[in-house]
Every structure is written in C-alpha cells, then in structure tokens.
Length: 429
Image (cartoon, rainbow, N blue to C red):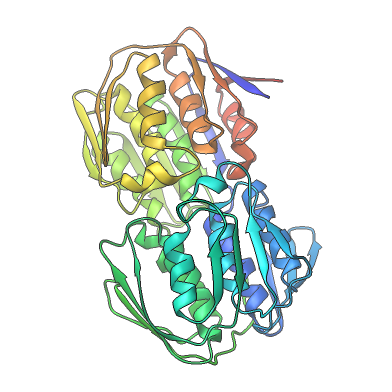
C-alpha cells in the first residue's frame, strides 16, 4: 500500500481541474440507453468511472476509445447483459444507477462490489424498482448488496426517500423513460445532494427525455415508452476535485489558479467558491477558471452542507486552521459513503491537534493555531486521503497519510498537480 509524506509548503501556479466524475458516470450510462452513437470527450478515467465504463460494455453497448474521444453505440433501452455479474468495484454511483438500468432486461443481473460497497444502503432503491414491476432483491443483510435485478419496468406511482442518497433518485430517472407505463415518483423527506439530481436531469434533457418535475424536485412525472437520443458532450471540470487545491491555497496563504472550471455549471460543488470567501480567502472567478489567494486571517463559518457532502472533507481541514468555530451541518448521509466520513474526519484531525466533535449530522470544529504532523489513516477513502494530505501542508514536521492507492478513484493526477504547485509531497510504496 502506498502512503504520502507531506511537509509544510507554500504553493503557487496553476493547474487544470480533472473532468467531472459525476458527469462522466451519467454520460456513459445515458449513452448506453440511447438509440445510436454518442460521443463523449475528455471523460474522467479513474477507478470509479472505469467501473461504469466496463458495466456499460457488459450491459450491451459498443464502446470505442479514440484518444480522449469515446464513441458509444447504445442499446435504445434494450438491455442485453453480456455477463451475469457486474462488479461496481468501489463505486456507489455505478452499483446504484446500473441496478435501475438492469431492470430494463428480463435477464437477471447480479451487481456487487468491494467490501465498502457491500456496506452501502440499497434497500429503498430495490424496493422502489420492485414496486415498478422489476424482480429485484438484496442478497446482503438489511438492504445491502449484492443485489439481483431483472425487469421489466411496468410503471406506476412510487415514493422513495431523499435522505439517504440522491443516487436512488438519479437511478429511477435514468430507467423510467423506458418503462411500459408512466412513472410518477415522489420524494419523501429532505432531498439531500440535490445538485446531483440536477446533473442527471440536465443530461437526460440533452438526450431528449421528457420529465416533468416541480421546482423543488419533490415530484416527477416520467412518461413511459420513450427512447433517448445520442448525446455529444465534453465533460466539464470537476469542482469537487478542484476544492482540494483551492482549499490548500486558502490555508497555506498561497495563490493558486485552477483552470477548466465553469461556475455556471450545474455542479453543486461550485459552492466552494462562496464558502472559501466566507472563510475569508480572496477568490477571483474568471470565465473558465477560479483563483484563490490565501492571505491568512481565515475565520470559522457555519454551513449547511446537505447538498455538498463531497466538500465536507476539505472544508473540515480549512475549518481546522480558521479562527473560531466552524460548523458543517445537515450531513448525516456522510456516514454512508466509502467510510463514515464524519467519524473519520474527527478521529484523524484530532491527531493533528484539532478540537473536533462529530455529532449525528454535523461536525463542530475549533480552529487550531498550529497543527502538528502525525500518521493518519485514509480509511481506503479517496476524499479522506486528499483532505489529510492538504492538512499536512500546514502541519509542523511531517504528516504521513497511509493507504493512498484510492486517490485515483476521483482525481488520478492529484499528487502530480499538487507537486506542480510546489507542495512537498512524497509518494512512497
């Protein structure tokens, strides 16, 4: 297993944001469902997205790569699995969204993954697919994977919780246009991570899907019997990943510019721009770039992160060096990610000397003037590994982050990019 050794660093320069993981997953799945050839340019090629691309092939699409351009000949919704078992690896997006797509085939498909995936909640999605006419069940305890799914989707009126994962909603939205009858979907409770549903809707609209919904995304009417059109899409830069170098600039008093970022994107994590401003960093927004000048003097904030769970790791690190208290609230769903991220952040940041409490649905952080280097665990979670590497840039001495082989899940060039900016990071194997 690889580890990172991080020393205090001053950063400067510019890098290019990696392509969006969320857009890449959804674009390939819509291409699988479309009738004809879709073209996807500059997708993110990471561990999670490769799990989706392999699953798209195994569900019946023809996939051709020509450099940074991928051509996908879709199935028109006629899913014919080439394999009986789909391995989602470590990707929650893959197993959840592909489970709904598997309900478009009469042939049963088993969807599974690594040990982390086998702990992810799936019950509400599988129950909803069953209510829509699929034959679906969880083989794991308490609604956990593996899952076995076969179709077909008949349609009907169904409800699903919005409080566990927005991926449940995105999954239904992808498959529902191919149901025989109309699907009327109602979201119960609070819809967390709403921007990810908005990305799904944006790409479905690009493919010509007809989906009628209210402004709060609580009710959806999806006429059945639709056929999606091919899409032609260049994947935008990923704000979730860019948040790490931007946050690093804020805490190290550095000036860093990240290119390939469009603040008009549907990505909810573009909120990192306003949140870093709230902390007191100087942030400049350009047409396709964001620049942070960390001039020091950061102050704690209170932020409802219900729609931005992937920003919480780096926000917790920024809060660790900001004066006063930082509260990151409305994030109980972070306990159901690759690891329990609230517990992981609290446990490891305490080793650096941070006063931090993880409550059932929030983090309370009292900023420390001086972090001290330590040995930190990543919990086999890519966002934990990157967040703790960023923290090491301002911790005295050396900080070791163990088991960082997971970073390519979302940001394959993270270490390379941070070194380009001047970060003192050593990768050891």
